[in-house]
Length: 389
Image (cartoon, rainbow, N blue to C red; front, side, top):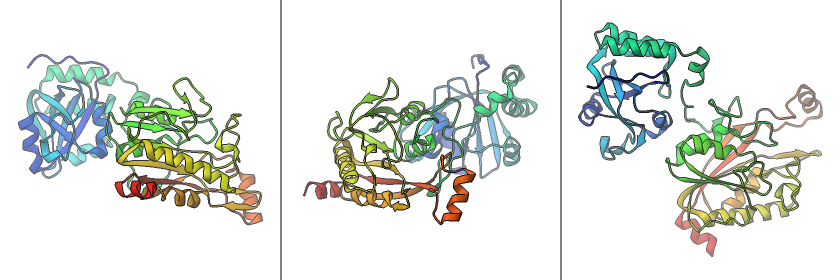
């Protein structure tokens, strides 16, 4: 095998297999992962080091080198299509198998989304070197990765895990090294909401549209997760957002793979000065929902059959009056789309979540808004016929 070129930026990735799937890995010289863990696979670069954890035999095999970038469907028929996020590999000298893999990985605080670098990767390579792998290549590798700063290791620790329940509570507005959107923007969207939707309902290369793009969170997440994206807003906050009214979108019928929208929840916030902004309309008025319905009809037109629209919306308590904005929006959406699910997204960083407001809510007997609805619906042939009647 040609001598491995070791770079300081090299990372390590652990794939998982069983007795039934391990042989196919080595027959095809390809490792694969399911969609739930697809994000870290797409970050693999040629030359990164790879390991294979057999959960049935509790062994960890290595050391392998990525012979390609991480991609979708390098071998479409592999593992009957169950693990489409894949990378090709070759070996650094002979394959070594370490026992007690679970104990080793626990020490590394590894989970299925973890990217190994710095001292963690160095530790693992040293274990394989001790067992007799190529000392030359591995010691070169160890010296390179151990030069990484601890802060770099933490920042590249892995991709977020996809949520497993209908309660989403994110401690920060953004995630990862690069910021997504502007956390100072009024009503900014939590970036992990969009991340989870992408990895649940889309594939790399799919086209995602955000018709009320705000500070551009959806654009930033889509670009990092390798999706095509178009962001519109009636009053753009940055150059890569196209000025447009969501009630008339300049796209062809059935041309979009997913839509995310986080509209104004009424006129309680001042978003911009544009006279046609729906955020200037009180959410306790019929006109507000009539204008949102115009948006729904347009989104139904551009969305492909069977694809997802995700609508983030919150209720309103204003001037001693509660308005169930989420329920009323859901009722309108069901005229055009098929319900899929509803997620509860915890609200953090709200201007009303202060000691004074908390004490006021307790004394005066009202509740501060603690969550938003993420309404997930699908365009189906049945719903299309209903909308056209």
